[in-house]
Image 1 (cartoon, rainbow, N blue to C red):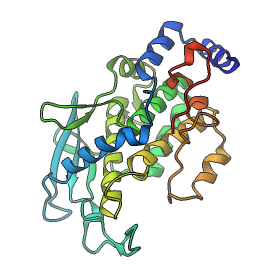
Image 2: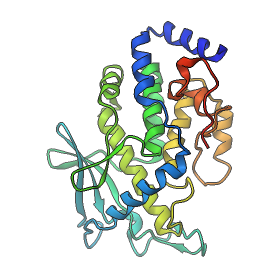
Image 3: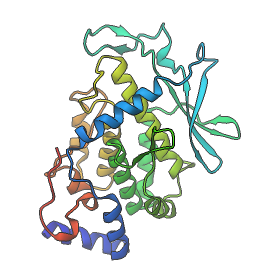
Image 4: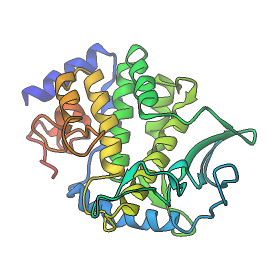
Length: 287
């Protein structure tokens, strides 16, 4: 009860109306599900679709699959990605520990006027782009974190007319977000969200190709997006920088996912994700 009142005071200081808080909580509160098992079948179906997409003969002659059209921007993938090169040995098979390539690797792209824009962004580049948002709008940054948490478990995905999963976050929330954070380092925020969706899909492909065929763990999509969520929690001053940095030292390598548990985890960092936020009761503990 005390925590909820404390958060309400914080939102009041930011000038966020109760009607906006109620709308956000209604649209983004988490389902009463164990999230990793909930996401598994969706992840597998999305992955199996990607394996059917066309692939060019080499890096200079990639085949592009367009997935999302957002105004004048196309969010797409191009195959093969750099890790698919037979000479690439920067990956390690999870089961055999053999150094190898990722034959199914894709190159996520944003295309405008028929041309790929931006260089291939590293995780460091994207962390830096998100860090800059803390100087623009705190509540917008919180909305971004909540949407990415839900995207990690494909909660906002819907099947299209061909029966394939596509990212489709609530339009009302996107409109609020766009007013508060129009762009992320020049990329429209809606495009940025869909780009991260494709990036996380490619991480599931990597995990699958390197030996974890059943996607039972959080490796891949989930840990990738929860690392971005963790960074946002730090920028919101709801998670310590030391804990964030310390998580990188533990497996999985290069990831620092935000814990899914209630205590010290998701609901303390993003309270509006709680189904019970306005009931002033203890939130459900998602595992």
